[in-house]
Image (cartoon, rainbow, N blue to C red; front, top):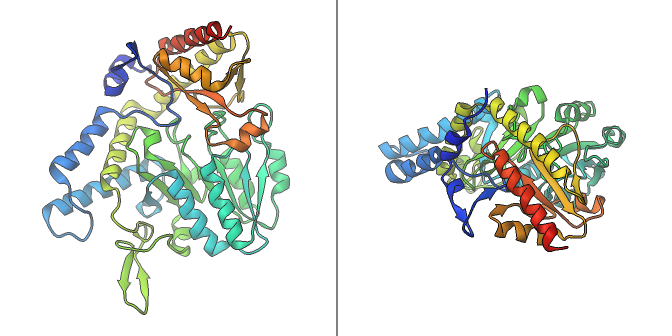
Length: 406
């Protein structure tokens, strides 16, 4: 089934505006996605009619707000095929989720001399928290190298695994290269060494169906704003038996059972990891985004984006002097590239004046850009609401960039 893009684009108010008197071509979905009116309306309803702090309130508004918050948790559980609502922890986003795991799992599991494996393509938010853990606990980082086509060197990964390996934390999808990693295989190999597996799903959650039970990862994290939901809300999925074992990351209201000056006991899952007032309105917005995606069809979304990727790759590859970084056959609709002799920042600035929004720079993956001997790229990242006509506009814009720079 092909998507009705005219209808879909009307759901996203921002897409219809002009930039510098030119129609906006929004190709920066890897950084953040736009929000459908249905998500905006869900948040407005909360503020206009139902706003009240969740949990423990005995009055009508608090009960309504709590119900909406917990309904969102159930929607996410169903969407990622988790076993229980208790496995869905709300956080501020992917970065907050990784930091939570690095602290909580790290305090429980890591000893001096233990090893943690990351990959060369990780976002900084899936590098720095683990470095901090290693500094605290005297552990060591090991890194899976990236091949020339942008895929992980799985053979090298196998050689890195050892009895000292305690945690493997890798991205589901590279935010720079678009590569989809074989996370089920990575997980299986790590589990053979009794290591825990953390998957950074910030760039994977919006591009296809996810089943955390099939993958068998121990943790999967993502941000709402990458999946057409509000900013400031994210999800930490963790297996229930593991979340029960590890200590909470933060203390405060809502995560306690009893408090005395002598001893505090913690609440049951998932509240044990949700200290303070949660971003309950953001959670409701995330639930509305999940509803929207389900109504459109995640398989149809994936198919639309696949068509866009194939069309854009062929179109951009025809430009003389343009080099694409990340040429795996298994990738999402993201293309990072450089024009020969033209700085990525200059390319991005010219495209902006033409109404075309792309991302330039190292994309918070400095070790990866260093591996390819560059300091950054231009990144065009497509969502299902983008069109082939917008790809054509990008193509024409890049020809204009080449013309301006001789």
